[in-house]
Structures are given as C-alpha cells and as structure tokens.
Image 1: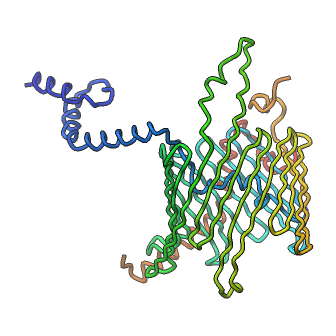
Image 2 (image 1 turned 180 degrees about the horizontal axis):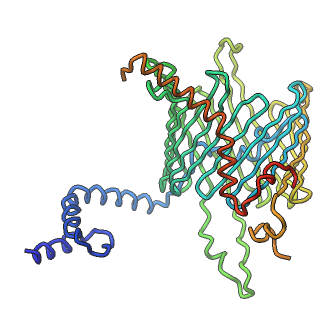
Image 3 (image 1 turned 90 degrees about the vertical axis):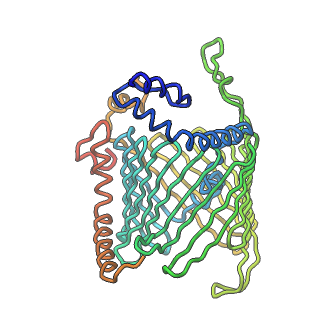
Length: 389
Length: 52
C-alpha cells in the first residue's frame, strides 16, 4: 500500500516546483496539490501563455500614472520657484539608513516669516517623513515597499482644527507590463465616503502606453460621482541592454556608455474636458528640455466668466558639475529662471525669479541650503561617504 | 452597512483620539526610529545641536 501511494504521486506532478526535503507529509501534500492541478493548471498555463505573448511583443513597464509628467515637473519651475528669502538647514545624522533633521525658514513678502521642522528617515524598504510648521500643522508621509512591484503610501496633513485634516492612502502595483494604482482620500471607514481614485496603465507596444484614471467622489454615502481621465504616453525606442557598454576595455576601466537621446511625449484628456500634452527630451546627459501645453476650458460659474484658454510652457534644465540651472518661457509672456549653485558639499545657494511681462510684475527669491553632518571624519569614511585620505 | 448612531458616535470619538495621538506622536516616533536605527548611533545631544 505504501509503495503504491509513493509511486503514484511523483509521476503525476510534472509541473511541481523543486521539491523540498521529503517529510512525513510529502505524499499527502503532493496528493492535495494534484487534486487542484486540473483546476489550477489550465488557469496558470493560460496566464503564462498570455504573459509570454506580451513578452514576445517587447512590452515594457510603463511607470505609474502619477509619474506620467514627472520629468516635466523636474524641469519646469512650478515645483521649485519660491518668493522671498529662504534658508534650509539639514542635519544628516546617518547616511545608511538615511536619517535627517531639517529646519526650514521662509520669509515671504506679505506672509511673514515661517518656520518648519522636519524629520526624514529612509530605509531600504521604508520611508518616513514628518514635519511641523509654525501653525501646528503636522504633515506626515510613510512609504513601505513590500516587494519590487508593490508600494503602499500614506500621506496626511493633520490640523488641530476639526474637519480640516486630510489623510490619503494609496497602493501601487507595478506589474510586468502594467501599473495599477488605488488611492483613497479621507476614507470614511464606516460608510465608504471620501474620494477614491483608481488608475490603470498598460503598455500596448514597446513605445506606446495607454491608461485611464477614474475618480469616485462620495461626499455622502448616497451620492456617488465619477470622472474619468485618459492618458497616453509615447517614448523613444527603449535603449539596448547596457551589457555591451559595461564590458571592460583592455585598460581595465569600464567604457562609458554611449549617450542615447531619449524623449517622452504624453497626452492627457482630463475629466474636466481639458487637454494636457507634454514633450520631454534629454538633449545630452546634462541638458533636459520640456514642453507643456495645457488648455483651461471653464464654463461660466461662480469662479468667473467662461474661459477658453491655453498655456504653453517651454523650459530647459542644465546640469553642471556644481550647479543646476533652469530656465522657462511661457505663452503668457512670463520668463523665469532658477539657479542652484553648490559651493561645497555642505553649502548651496539658490536664486530664482519670474517676470510677467503681460502684467508687468515680477517675483524673486534667494535662498541657502546648508547640510551639516553629526559624524566625525572617521565615521564618515566608515559609512562610505568620504574617500579615505 | 447599517450602523447605529451610537456605534458611529463611538467610532468617531475613537478616530478623534487616534488623530490626536498621531498628530502629537508622529514626529517623535520618526525621530525615535531614526535615532535607534541610525548607524553610527549618535548621542542625544547631537540630535539637538545644529551645525555640529
């Protein structure tokens, strides 16, 4: 009897994973797995076949919907320009895992002085950030990477005044050729209220990816409003594997990889009916150029009369060894620039400004960034931050 | 899902307490986690003194 059961199980499980060391339960587990094999087998084989078909088309991981215009945001000034004076002092307590305490002082004309304290901790898989400003508003961020394809992010702004706080939780799943993102803002756990956003982005060809994002707004349990936006992203041909470039030359030094110009064009049809189209190109490994076209179509409402306008922004970013320069021109006759000059690894100076020629106004900002470290020179060499002298 | 008003009140009160705890305790928690996990482990005074 024992011989029969042993003989039956190994032959009938050809698709089993490499078997672990046999234990007393092995024949039982094999029997259970074989019981589900007729059901699970076709499903897994279909999925494997579908995946193989997609791989044979050379599809790539398209990135998330949130990062669709990330290169544009790195080049254009909207996220970087500030007005007035600014000083950022960062105290690096540890390099790996990264732990920093930041003190930020801002002096803006019309808004007075502002102080912000922040703490950042970054691990291989976790990222924690907390900040508090002069008014007592606590901002918090927590990211956890469960695996190379799954990230959960939590973000919140907590105000002591009731009803003004915001909390957002989102989960990113990066499949081999697609990205799924589910986000929820101020979720009401009991009644499902809040704003829920789901997005799906799939690579159709190695260069083209299409996706959509749906916003479910539920201010009360009985009201549900949805709005869908559509996205498309076209990139230049994916670069060839860098293995050839990484091969050592006879001198023993790795040959530098040849620069392959890359560009990305995206288009978004937003739920409000507005269209946004962007184009980003890396002209050389130190120069980025970005062009952004956004329409603003608004029906007549309490915010003002009906508008049908469009704005085009053209910007460039130049990376120097110790400096970064961003320049931007707008179709609304606005010209802006931002220079970040690093004098020593611990000290950087920022100056930026924007002139609106149509309205004849301007705004300028200057700032300094100081990074100090608690580690002595020996500790920094031990942590790999400095070369030993 | 039908919840009684009393359950909703209790839940909202608990959420309020949780919100206060997180508002007050998040930054100290981040600083403590960073202090314990940072390598080399700094002394407490190094966290407070700026520029040193």
